[in-house]
Image 1 (cartoon, rainbow, N blue to C red):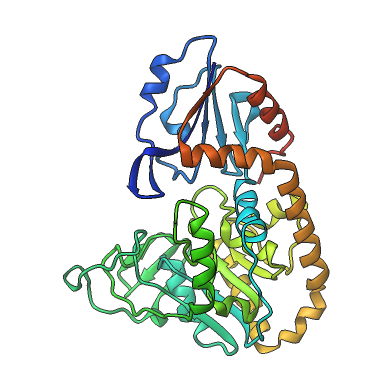
Image 2: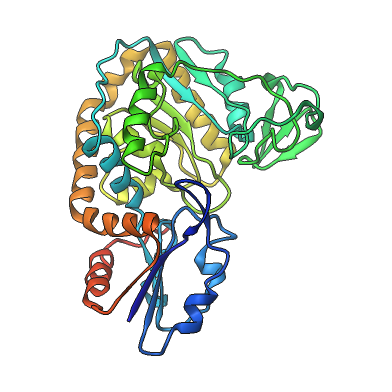
Length: 369
């Protein structure tokens, strides 16, 4: 018997369609016989809640992880970094079409929701540039405002700076790049964008998935479509290697992008058959990565005509084609996972199903720094 479960707990919903992570796999371990297999498919786990941290190492337990750095077939770990690609190709190209024929008003967009410390710093820096649109939403992960009693004084985001791998606020508070400044008690002003055109898109797609209202990370504000280049930061910069919906929407909509992520993200993209648009530093120094991204953004804001020097149209078409190749190859496996995410764990006697899927994802190259 094969038991298959994802790290999203269908029986423990915060609200309809919004699920908590499994806190324990005890029930599966208790009924697991030597002849059985348990497959745990990671779905948006953080490092502390990852199945790698919660499950014993034994021959009949398999972990399929969307973290691209965790592929290790010798330990029953299988990396499947393409879940996010398959998921958003399904959302954006198969389940709904959006007219993106908008007039270009900006050279670059820098759209942020959760106010991670480095994002706050970055918005303060891009404010000095012309031809750029930016946003910042001072909410925590649940998008709930904090009370004024929780807040310290307003901070001037133009005074925040980067010292090695830490973000310094008011010359006294040192934060990790991904730390939420509002959670840490700082009050910042909200920089809002227009959302009216894409709100309807999120409603329509949401009705197909348990009436979930898809947020801006799935269907971005209209300013995203009114700009030539997307400059964004991943949520985490101190562990793992994030490959999120932020990059996939650019691949699907053929939009050149600059991403500030952990070191190795551009190397990973090239290794997996994508072409990078610009020459961005990809090494271990966060300060150098940040400066390299900002300098490229600044150049584009000064003169968007330099895009022609980078053959962005050819690269965009290539990256779109590669994205659709991945979806065509792994789409069935994604839909299998997606069904379990929404409907709960399953038990199957036909072990060929998982054997075939393991063979499919076994050819995904392990990423090495």
